[in-house]
Length: 246
Picture 1 (spheres, rainbow, N blue to C red):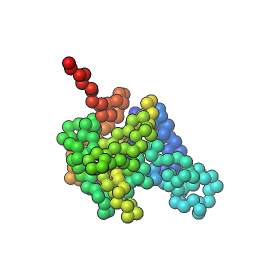
Picture 2: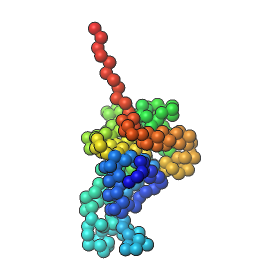
Picture 3: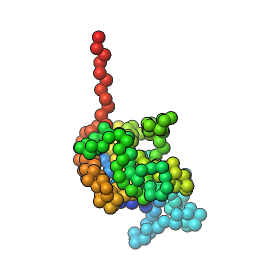
Picture 4: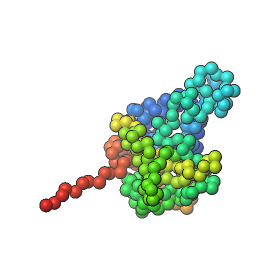
């Protein structure tokens, strides 16, 4: 409760109910989060009484616990009634594997080059940030007829929801899954979440990869912005309308 910013690196896949509730409470109290992970919050887990074991059956039919809300299944399962995307803006259901055959670029194609997160990175729209990701979290995307424009389908789910970049992924022979990198704020008074959507942002592929210097700079930019009190600075400034001249 005394922290300004929560950092979630790596591959943060297993979350207990208490952990998720504490995460949401942190956000609801106006605190910010940077998620440098993919496949995040995918399985519900629980602990035994002395916290010496982490329990996950991955199958509700063999899980002996009677309370459906504690079943160790995917957090996206309807019996838990606790969607992942509502908490972090992305979900592995819409994502997939980034290193299998797909239509992507083994990295993030920039959609919003004006984002403050990309300050001094010299990245333009349609540039690719090299990042070979084992697993991606994604979100439904909408493409224009000529595929030159892409936007977020769930735009109205949150108070603010921005797409920075995306990549195509693959799962269950479906090569149209995606990895998305987003900035979101669920409610006007809630904290801001920047979610990179990649398991490899903090691994060798990211921090020591082809574009490691850019990824490090983006990470520092993001942390500095999330530590500021003015949450508007994290989002892309809206263009000012020039008054018509007579």
